[in-house]
Length: 191
Image (cartoon, rainbow, N blue to C red; front, side, top):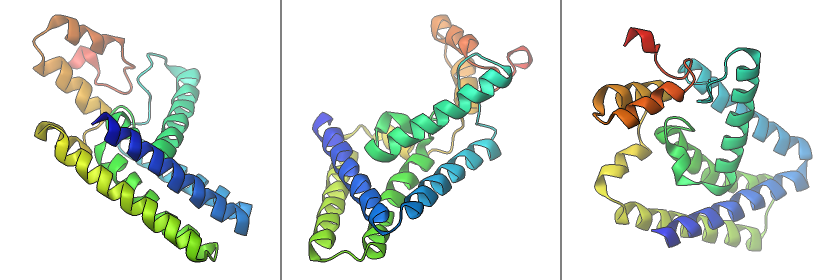
C-alpha cells in the first residue's frame, strides 16, 4: 500500500510538473490561467457547498483569511502529489479529489498538445499516465473495501463532524468536535 501511494505521488508529480513546463514553454500566461481557473473552481465549489471555512476554531476576518490560505495550500499540495489522505471531507472531499486526479491526467495530454510535443514528450506523458493508472488501480484493489467509497463521497466537513458527534459513543472522540470551527460544523447548541 505504501509503495503504491509513493509511486502514485511520484508519478503525479512528474506528470503535473511536465505539464506545467509544457504550458510555460508556450506562454507563461497559459500556466497562470490554468492554475488560477482550477483553484477558482475548487474554491467556488467549497463556497457553494457551505464548506469553505477551514476547521481551525478561528472566526472573523482572520478565520476567513486562514481558511483561504489553507484551502489554497492544501489544493496545491494535492494537485502535485495526490496525497490520498486529503480526500477527506475537511480537505478536498472524496469525489472532488478523484475528479481532480482524473483532470490532472487528462490535462497533461492537453498540455503536451498545446506545447506541440514531439515523440519524446508524448511517450513520456503516455507512459507516466498509464503507469499512474495501473498503480492507482492496484492501490484501489489492495485497500480495504470499506475505504473505496471514500473516493466517491460527497460528504461535507459539516456532515462528517455531525456524524462524528451523533454516531460515536466514545466521549473523547465526541469532544474533539468542540475544537472545530463552528462555521465548518454544525451549530453545537442546536444538535
